Image (tube, rainbow, N blue to C red; front, top):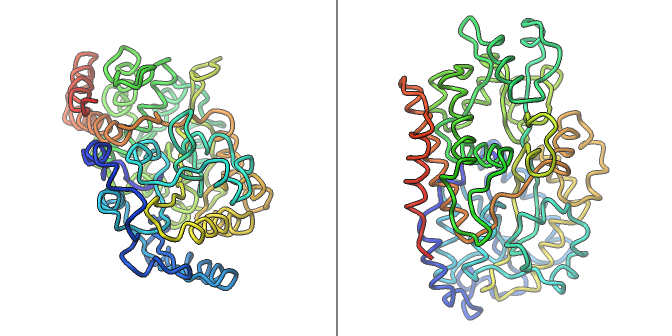
Length: 437
């Protein structure tokens, strides 16, 4: 996701697992008006450059839906900083929207509350079938072996963005393909106040995504086969240290990056303060900072040479899912809205507007998604992206491990590089804060 949604996660998820019965079908979602078959309330996440930009994108589409179905949609754009807590409060009270956006990494956590309508075979039949969606995107829609808690709406993947001009000036003609090459190139590119790479070290969301990818490359997971936390194993420790060392011992990222939390890294890359950026679907953001598509290239984030399977992971599966509250009294209208939003025409319109990848396969045929950036990221999504752990405590994992990495980056920026012991200590502390199940 482009926003810091993991920072919003709280222990409320664990509480909601215990109070899932409060989410049953008796309440009126949205508080009264939503019981009308001609009215829906929709909570949309902030996907654009501002809340107003989202409103400009979405309101014409909602009017189109009303014209087709006669159903009026009441829209609320919810900032990422508020979204998860708003959803959790709504799940507890039963007073929420009919339809809502969720970060796809939250799917299993919210599924565990019982608040979301499962997309079983019948529900998928109402929206054209599950085979319309990218398998990787569906893998981030709920716990394995269960009916998904939501359906994909916008898809994203991480890529390595590299500045063509700065690479040429350093005598480099292609992006790095392995981590060793990334570090070596980063050293050549770090000179004169410019750095080889920029990271968003104060952003727990970004931190945990990179920790997850690198752990996969080390053959490690943050949860064991039974779904229990395994944060401080050797592979996880090596992965986190590898990431923190970019700013610490390798010094190819600026010490100030440890404080970045609001997309400053994108601005640094766009303005030439750094030559490389690992980000998900950054094109629209770069354009807003004045960078032209021809100024940069996009390649997969480096993986170990010759790696296969999970060890070849280069991205988490990013994106936004669309869910229906189980407590809605307008299930029929809500599913009509999901069908509309995931229809090929609407998928094309919306993902064009946001610069994201359509998770509906038919929509990808549009030439708008054949840009070099989106072609590269679509290939990553199909071949080397893996979903974050689909476990009930996933949102706490994001916050706690992301914060551990943030702390380690801050220490490295202050002149205390990461060691195996310091990394293990931070990850152990994070694991100890996970809810007991």
